[in-house]
Each structure stands twice: as C-alpha cells, then as structure tokens.
Amino acid sequence: EAGVAQSPRYKIIEKRQSVAFWCNPISGHATLYWYQQILGQGPKLLIQFQNNGVVDDSQLPKDRFSAERLKGVDSTLKIQPAKLEDSAVYLCASSLEAGPFGLHFGNGTRLTVT
Amino acid sequence: AQTVTQSQPEMSVQEAETVTLSCTYDTSESDYYLFWYKQPPSRQMILVIRQEAYKQQNATENRFSVNFQKAAKSFSLKISDSQLGDAAMYFCAYRGLLNSKLTFGKGITLSVRP
Image (cartoon, rainbow over all chains, first blue to last red; front, side, top):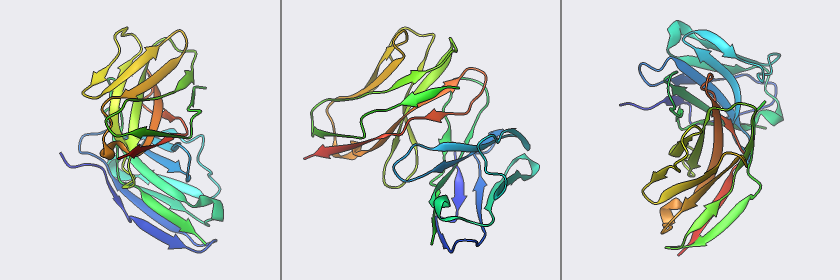
C-alpha cells in the first residue's frame, strides 16, 4: 500500500512569512494527525482529525497555526506568521481508529525559520 | 494526562552485542498500548514493536523484545545482535484505549560501533 505522502520535504522561510504543508494519508485511514518535532525532542501532537472533524487541537497555537482536512482525505497545515521557534520537523500520520495499531508516518517537512 | 519518560539521551553498543533502552510512563488508565518507534536520519518514524497492556506476555519481533512491567509502569526495549542499521533515534510512545493519538517520550539516540 502507498504510505503517507507529505510535501514539501524542506522549507526555509523568514520570520513573519507564511508557510503551508500538505499531507495525503493512507487510503481508508479515517484519522489524521499533525505532529511537531523540535530538534532533539519527541513529536508533539498539534492536531488530530477524525474524517474532516477535529478531535484534539489543544496544543495547536491557534493564533498562528491553522489546519484543515477537506473531504476527510488530504490535509494542510499553515503557519502565519512564522516565528523562529517554529523551526522543526512537521510530521503527518494516519491510522485506523480501532484496534491496537500504531500510526503510519510520512517523511515529514523540515521547516527552518530565519 | 499521560506522560512518557526516556531519561537516557544517548546510548552506544558494539555491533553484535545486546542493548536495552529504558522507558517509563505514567497513566491512570488500566488498558492501553505501548510502542517503540525508530527514527533514522530519513526522519520517517518506523514502528518497531507494540505491547498491549492487558497481555502479560512480553512482545517479541525478531531481534527486538520488550520487558513490560505494568505495576512499575516500565517498558524497556532490548535489541539483540545489534546491527549498524539499528543506529537511529528510538522513541517510546503511549496510546490510550479510547483515543488513537500517541504520546511520545523525548527519545534516545542509539549509535552502533563496528
């Protein structure tokens, strides 16, 4: 089966600019996640979607981050305006909801804010 | 809220030797799942092994096995016959029964000496 697709692979922007990341989950996976992984740390959940509804966005900095999942498939994560501390790898993952399954991850987008 | 602690930032092992990576967690739930993920420089998180908390038997996947101590809330990963390709960051993760999101530890960097 095809894995989780993410783009771009790398992105460099200046602070106060905006940026968007795209994710296409594994076909049939109803749940989609965006994680932020700062260098040297474990991934931190930003937002979780079930189909096209938000399940958990408690750690999403809503003043600058937004995410949507149109038609319950692809998702985009946007940062506007970016800050230096947003430099991180942004990982998208998807899963089947039921059962003891782990998450399937994409290759991530490495964002550098200068 | 659940927390996952990996207190060792780095470990090193000689090729063909055995190494154990430690993880502790905190939860008030009685049923849950635990995972070990591997993250090589390519950044993609790869599932290594999972454990269901209701199972007393420790999970094993080829050279990888866990020591799950539910009462002590401890979940360590043992890698036998270490190979150069095992060098990566390893993350311990927790998943509750009702919600599929993962909570990660900070990770440990494993190096393998030839």
